[in-house]
Length: 322
Image 1 (tube, rainbow, N blue to C red):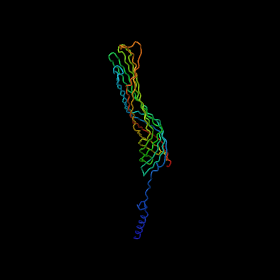
Image 2: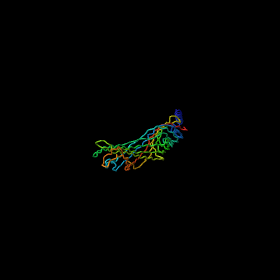
Image 3: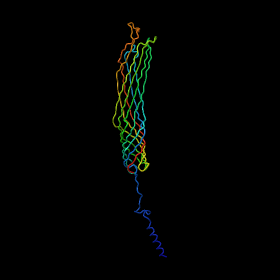
Image 4: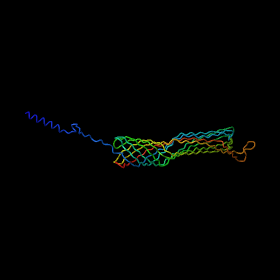
């Protein structure tokens, strides 16, 4: 009986000794390997398209001032002011091409360096105007004035715009990444503004309606400035792998082209056509007019542009290594 108990105890001990090391928690325990992301590593190139919303915040002031007594003892001397604060914008379609290199560090951190080229035709065109109309009676003279002052602007960009950007980001999962965009953009931006003035005035007999004097004038100031340099761009994007090598991406970028200021002035002439008078001051019976030019008015113009773009694109990138 004692022999039987000893045999069972030896068998039990032998069974315990045969428990696998992985269950017993021994030194030979094997942990599952850490799988690092294999996507978004290496060189890639892609094509895409999107829209570009170009904007120009315009602040402009033009003044016309005249202080001479060119009509009936200063009766029609005047000043005309036009101030504009407006955002002009145009939206255009565009094509994109990109070439870059990206890498995943650790298990979540993404970093990409990318060249982006965009092609589109961006031109911003806008105009605003103000008018002045006066009608006065001075003794027996009827005085009428109609004047108009207009601002016209045009901002032109080069069709091709290269960008070099850095894209730091985080992996959402092993097939999708969310990243920021920071970098530089190059373009040649040309801002043009025209301040145009036109006016007609007349003096007539308030009783008979006979025209005594007619005045007409126009003035125009045009100015163009060009900035050919690099600009700052920021944004964000989302990229996801749809096959082993092909990724779908969507980007947004903001580009600030800075400020362009212009300041001009000129003196111009009012063309007067006065009906000939007799020695006693009465209108000559002969229907004739004498021309008198008064270079007595000043046209001043100041404008400032704040120019920027919003760019949204969608495209496909091909990774040369999976």
